[in-house]
Length: 221
Image (cartoon, rainbow, N blue to C red; front, side, top):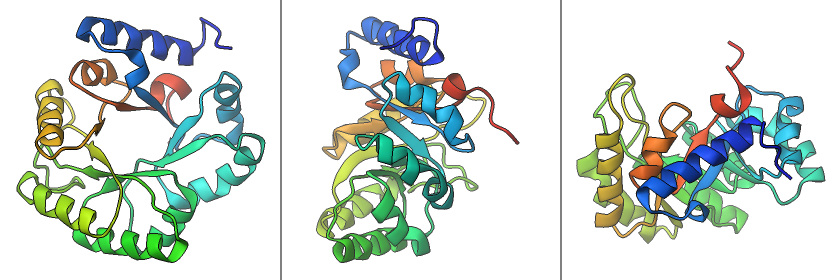
């Protein structure tokens, strides 16, 4: 199905090369095509080429775009990769198949209530603030075991851990930290790596890479 000249195939090829270098199986890596700010017309070619896992940053934007796209492609998985406000928990649980930004007890409680109400358990990645950046979302590393225990107690399925390393610094040590934290806490998934560093993430244990620009081009400002 995939054309060797498409951005999608180029990303798959680079993931495969990174896997070969790390002695990993490319089948272990889920490519999340981050379609935030891109219209349905830009998403259609990737759907046609076989991509089925997509990421959106905002509940409202996903609500506007995806119901129609999913009618023709019911096998699509939609992941929320941006910050989530607690008051949007019900809408997120109704719309998304996976949430990558569980990062605080108040959101955990809102998601647990929403999942109980909907009768639907949505797997979540706990976002970790690996760079200790004040302006960035994510659970502080010392608070992580407590938040994981709370999530397990609330019957929230944990897919793993997620991080966004600090901008402009070599990301490998931050990815390695997330990999270790996931191992220490018995979690299988590592959502890490974006367009500029997903190959490094794959070589450091990523199971999910969140790639937007390399697939869709620069976002409209």
